[in-house]
Length: 549
Image 1: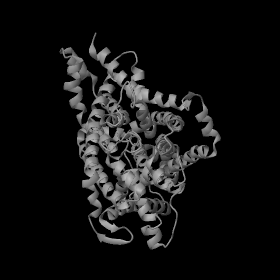
Image 2: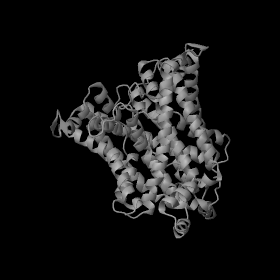
Image 3: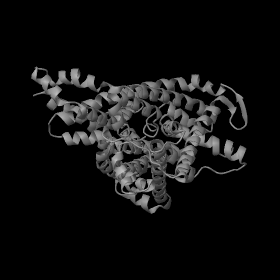
Image 4: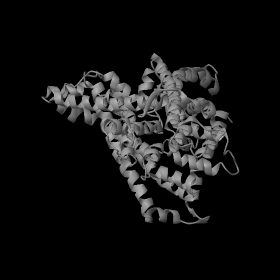
């Protein structure tokens, strides 16, 4: 019996069953009990009680709106950057990518600084007292935040469009607008659909934004938190998360089909030459104005957090001060240490386990290979609050008690990022010539030796990029671990969230700057690695395959 063919797949499968399937089934079974008795009473209550039904319907409408608007905005910015010769395109690209280092709750905090009751823009400049705590603010912030995702997805397929098809349309007498609408946009349709569905999935799973600026508006994610933390109703919290999971799984299935349909467009990228579209001046002016407005808002959000952190009172007293950073020795250092530790361990474990699972799935024939691939990919579609509730429910009792420990947080973050590691590993293996592995085997090397001495060195640059992505994502994560943290394992994102809820906006801004700094260092590391020639091709292909927050 060969360990790599039987023992290792079984071990990996058991681990995935324990940390993916077991919590999922735990939440499902809990939702089917009412006051300890089996039944469908919770589901009946959800669809018969008006406030709970409004939560579902309102969340769907906002998610659909945010997905549509962010896809449209991402398309406009991508077209401006890659299909025109307009000025400030590098600035627009930076603005579109910048939200990667800004957690959603930091965006919400900045939004309050600018547009709140005492906001710099609404109150100080326009003398308005607009109540921002509503679904409209959730829609605006999610649209701005998810534009990064849609921009990246659309850019990947847009730069892959072969300009020969566009030139053929021009030769047949088509105007530049007709080339855009009848050639370019149809060719990138799978990418647009993928962007729309992924933004919808992320909106449905978003926890921080609706909780901070939603006011009376609730989503399934925030309602489940209220049910668990506010009323200690684990049964209803589980029910709401199961309903949320159903919508997310549906969106993920459609997203997977759209990604498969778009594979052909991306393959053409290697042979085509990208050319700008000579659109009319009014059209280009409109695209440029939208891109400039978007970029201005993004930079304003970041600058407002910076000002709030280094001034006595944003909007009232702009005297420079470091007093808000006094919270760091009291609470921030422990959270910063935990954040760096959890993010580092998560990135290393995710990257290594991802390439191992990818190797098992793509290189070894065994029964259960499809199940292994499915369980390793499933966390991509599982909302963070669902996983957090699942871990809090199942790992607070035998056979495995992890509640209150750092291990439960790391296990949750590793599993959340595992689909990225799997897809990165599969992409690396797909690009490697199997004849090298065959030659190694012919020379008498075992599969283990081949894996360690050939596959791993060749995969190192790409795996480093995916590990850094996992690092940045873990630094920003909140929804998945909000149910798991304790005073001993608290992280920076939770401290920012709690300070914002308390109304200590200066302290929240100071802690946010630390989060942004750590995330920015991770992004700079990603950029440095991705610019290496060995990783550029891989980076373009899997840049947009990361899991939702």
